[in-house]
Length: 524
Image 1 (spheres, rainbow, N blue to C red):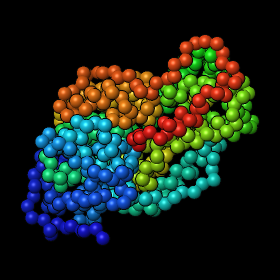
Image 2: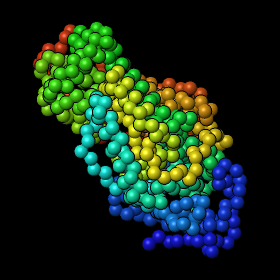
Image 3: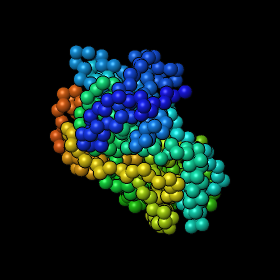
Image 4: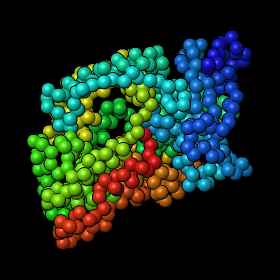
């Protein structure tokens, strides 16, 4: 049973920043900020490997405006600074989501020895997630289809399904849903800071964790020291407005692959222009509308497979794959292996309920026809890569609860940090990172010609790692706009003679490359 703290247990108020300005912490919050953190060996399954990592729980109120209305537990992990003499504080991390478990993120920095000497690295399962008090949805069942090229009549399938998802999440989450939010997670972070006895925290956040970091800095500017926002969101757009940037990035990656492949027509024979290469995809898709072909069961699975063009290291193998289908020598098992590898490489499901609550902080249009019009536009112009699904309604279209508070205006009254984004990332496009960097007036590291998501300490990118580690350890910012070469590098394939049918069979299969990508660490 969780300990319940009430106002009667409180003695003296404590002054610190609660929402960006110095104010007295109300009595009920004093004990939260001053609780003792009992570090101990991590329970089985919390962090793997557990060697060198400690775990603890911190108590926070469910509702900060009414702290007597129940408490939640927040699970945290710690890898202590290896050089106590150099220690300068804690480095709190978040892997994104919303709803990603962050206890194991302490291991992402294993190769950054200077960071590990300098900081206690802190992982966290945010409220609603993992080993913290969970927010759950009741599972929604459906027999509807969600094809990549829906008919007009099928568009309502998304509406019916997500209306049910929202009702089931409300039934499963109850009152807690209203209080699982970016703002309350930011408040939890400040309670963790206080409970750890730190005047300030430094922070590395990935993906949605960049939104969380920006909100924390806006609410608690006096509590934030150094900050890194890797694969950043756009702080000035709603979640759905950024979905438009996502489908633009998917389309741009496909265009770049067609250009790369057209320049190597002598090798692949798929056309001398990007339009001709795209035309070969369209021919396969047309055949799949009438039945299985090239190992694919239907056009939806093929459209999904084209999403592999996000990764530059897959370009040559994908071109060979399409050429083998055109030549009639494709391995029937390869198509299903490609789709399976891509699904495995997708962002792992976040905590059931948290994603569906936090993304509803933004106001979503309730007019389903606006979604249908966008879905039809992408269906008719570029359905490859699953673009239509990004334009569809979600459970937030039918939000069943009132937001307790709006997302605060994103401001920066704390030291300058660093933003990192890549130009091929389809989860947090470069356009989003540019706006985050410009709005906060901080340096942007652009990882060039790279489709990966999350970079610092994850990709072995010496340029990114050196710049960010130097900033975290020494406080030295990179130049205002820096370009680092990506590690997602296309295979060297000079224009040449057409590869033989036998050679198409013998090359390394695309599914193997995608399987390796799927196994790599990644933020949510």
